[in-house]
Length: 445
Image (cartoon, rainbow, N blue to C red):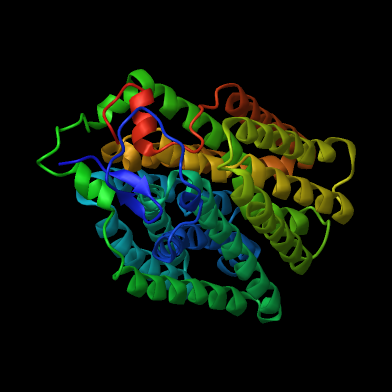
């Protein structure tokens, strides 16, 4: 069977030769490709939305259910921000390569909806923890399979733009959640429950719409008996070029995610418990950060990410400097609303340039089709596992040492991600998945 090659609508007949210049129209994906990417990208909306919704309600659940600081840390560690998500990513990523993208990302939303409903109706710690874990497992399984579908449908010179759309969804989810939390703040814990019910409703709507989405044509071709069988065993990820790619993507995302996860989940909590402002102020500040990230993704990332390798490295360098600077501010200035605003602005723009958006792009470009979802499930799961351990320690650390030691650690994490990302970034911009795989010494993706 002929190899598939990317076209404006996703995949099509092969083109011979080691490389080619892409026609101008391949920078403009077909409407169907945008729709599929939007539905797949809702995994990011539900993922980030659930993380922030839980963070926005932490202090209220802590008071109502008499949770200790350790229990608060455990709740965040076991949920969509950390260990629960990691378990789902490890399992769902592999199943996405074996069984197909559609089968996994369609049905995992039912688990998400069930978990979110349990959280919304929780009257004790058992319901709250069970629902949180279920939501975490569901989003962990959904993200790598959904992103693989987007990457496999995208034309070479629009891959960053389409995957950037999923990052827009990742920022939009928290914005909507935080605005709802702000509006419902006078209702107390009932307002938090209503926010959870909003995510339940969105999950059910997306589940219904996803039932009409076709399976990835590239995955179907790779599974065809007419093609030579590639080495699709997970252990092949731990040698050669695959190991280098796995190590690089894990490193840049793991260290970046420690800072992003802390910011996304704990900003309202820190603002309130460190007496910088009220719970409403914490929600508003956190919402502003995600809104800045959303605008930055649309204006900067989606516009420039597909241009060239040099452009990608410049974006990464600027983004890294901005993000490190965001947390160095807390080392020299007081934890007050103006300083928090500066931190949020710098981190929001910086993360659009050198954050999860590029991690998503490179995770599709650096691995073959039958290992793509497995690889991203591994890197995503590793990052969320480490974040889970970090979350367990964060609340006690914050209570005992204050904001400055925490900020120094976060600045260091972002520095590691920035340096490793810049020095070892592979040159894949504008190339088809098949061409990248040939360059890396493997079979066509």
